[in-house]
Image (tube, rainbow, N blue to C red; front, side, top):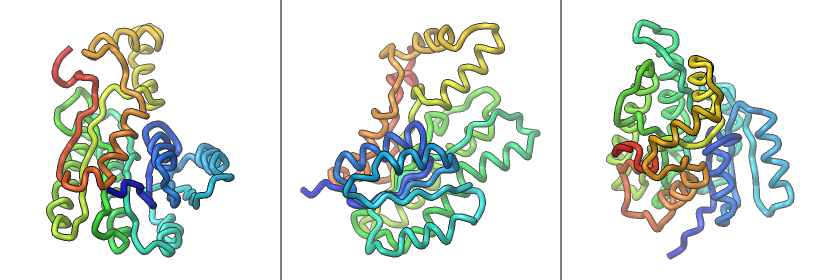
Length: 255
């Protein structure tokens, strides 16, 4: 079975899980990459990294809550007869109380509405064999303190994924999600640093304590997510759709 994914669009592509997905897809033979991120410096570094490779690497600096990137994305999609994979890896995790409407609206805009916008713009390039993958969160299945907006957005992503999967199944287009937890990324370290600051501790101490809550006693790495992302977007997973894969070292089952 042909398992090379020839074209992919990755959001949140400059850092963490998104960057690991870009690396994995290219490592596996992908030769047309559209990378979106608002981090201009990191995105250009990634493009420079692959400058001598036999690939087309299109970097789009984008605030996904605006429409400023639409024309660039249209141009990037134009040469393709089919976009084989979309990996939606962007997102924010601002803490909030339910009364903080501005934060709630922003989190939903970034984590949910922008996903709909990107998928809609790419829809006419999706065909039999294409796959859409949401990098969601374990908080798409549960709640968390001061994370009403984030939890709502991640539950909504799973609803969008399931709706798309049903709409597109007859066309051979799949939609799935990965639900990570405790992934050692800049985002996780930033959140744990906040916890450390509140209790007068260090990041290292808080990370060691948090790791004890993971049954496998190790943090998930971005490459772990990328490996599963490639599989779910490939033809090896051709009959897998509307599914959510939890990758968390067993932490959601109990420590």
